[in-house]
Length: 97
Image (cartoon, rainbow, N blue to C red):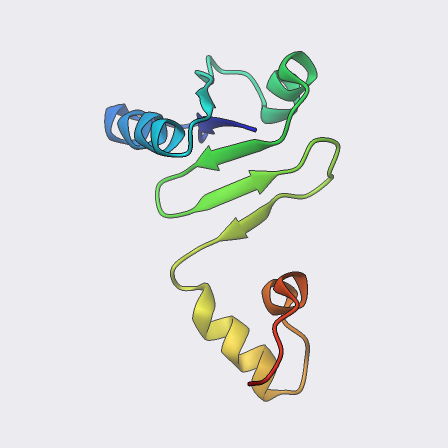
């Protein structure tokens, strides 16, 4: 897996992406106006994109990214209250207890 920034980036976002890559022992790949899929064609790996207020995971070959946003808790809780499933808890295979 490698780390890059969102398409519209700035120095702070780049610094944060580099720090995350360092902490996770991953390569940082500069965006250079390329799409994530274009970089993935070269690198052949999953990609973690550092955006302004969220992180997005782009699995290699996936059509849509998986993302986390700090405010996502509200709509996730609302889904659970309606008896709907939550993709994050499903993926983590969380159980009561």
